[in-house]
Image 1 (cartoon, each protein chain N blue to C red):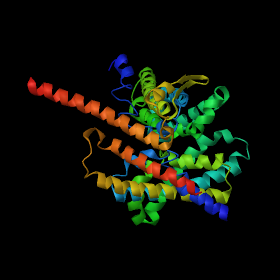
Image 2 (image 1 turned 90 degrees about the vertical axis):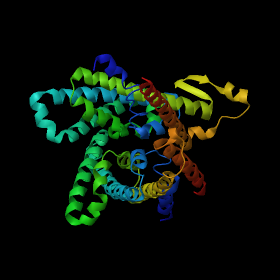
Image 3 (image 1 turned 60 degrees about the horizontal axis):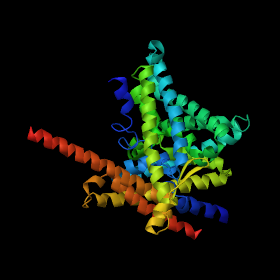
Image 4 (image 1 turned 180 degrees about the vertical axis):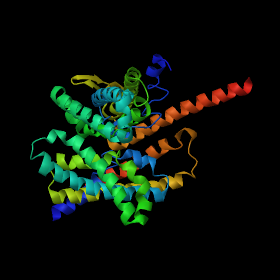
Amino acid sequence: MNQKENFLKGFVKENPLLVSMLGMCPSLAVTTRLENAIGMGIAVLFVLVLSNLLISLIMSHQKLGEWVKPVRIPVYIVVIATLVTMVDMLMNAFIPDIHKSLGMFIPLIVVNCIILGRAEAFASENKPLDSVVDGVSMALGFTFAIVVISIIREVLGNGTITVWGDVVLNMRFIFDFLNIQPIDMFVKPVGAFLTFGFLLAGVAAITNHRASKKVGKVAKS
Amino acid sequence: MSELIQLAFIAFIVENIVLTQFLGICPFIGVSRKRSSALGMGMAVVFVILISSILTWVIYHYVLALFSITYMRTIVFILVIASLVQMVELFLKKISPALYKALGIYLPLITTNCAVLGVAIINIDKSHTFSETVVYSLFISLGFLFVMYIFSMIREKLDFSPVPKAFKGVPIALVVAAILALVFSRLGGIV
């Protein structure tokens, strides 16, 4: 697998949220506004890239790797927890508003299955550079998915898109055009489950369609 | 006492851990296909959440706060939970093989269940006292068990329903969860 393929796989083919369905809790909880989703994406990017790098450095070192192997899961957890504590403090210092609205979902990145999953499935068996690319790809794929969910929820539920801080796009004209009020339900928990459910159904419909096309082609030839 | 009863009700229904706080979604979707496995997972979660939140509360207030190293809480909590789950597993294997058989396979999965770490953090963030921690953790985990059981019953029926092809599996489960969340959000008006 070359570097470009390695980079692109996180967006569509192996998207951690939409295909592997990892990390569902934060993606349902923080997607009430676009800026929260972006903040969560930044935090996950930071933790995932550095944890992939550190773990691949540890495991690719011959002696250290052999020594760590029997207790690797606790080692991964300590590395990840340290990085999460760092990102928690950094966000508290530089973007306190986002830190506040993400709340306990920042410490909960420790138990996000994407990070431990990539550590075990990819970083422990690959070179440091490949692992970093893998981390960037997976984190951006995750961010892409939660950004889509949060845009859908915020537009339908509140009629706005809060890009970052004061930069707010007003999408009320859609509702004015249809002469209805924004659907409050979508920024509530109900909307999270509903949006994610329909998004997954959309993804499944596309994959089914592609698979049937492929089968048709094979049958013809 | 009445405050504790109110807290119990809030934890059980109003702030339901799955449907309003989005914690523990992975096991909620992942192991709710059969009623027996939902019950097993739910019971294991009740067991672990209760012990781990009491333990983390004590450690936070009598160790971390004492040495003013509260910023270490994420690392310490996750290590406590991971080792606790291991110990509970060994303990159950020795003491009660029947219980181990029922809960055993779900225990390793619990370490990465965000509900466990989440409840431990909520108890600290909301500055609960010790008795409040016990009541809150017990009822919030019972709420998990309750919702998980209802959900698994619905999903058993769903297997025999004509669902559109694209919605088969997880998507329809999420739509059902949305309807359940709607019901629970209305129940919030009681308190």
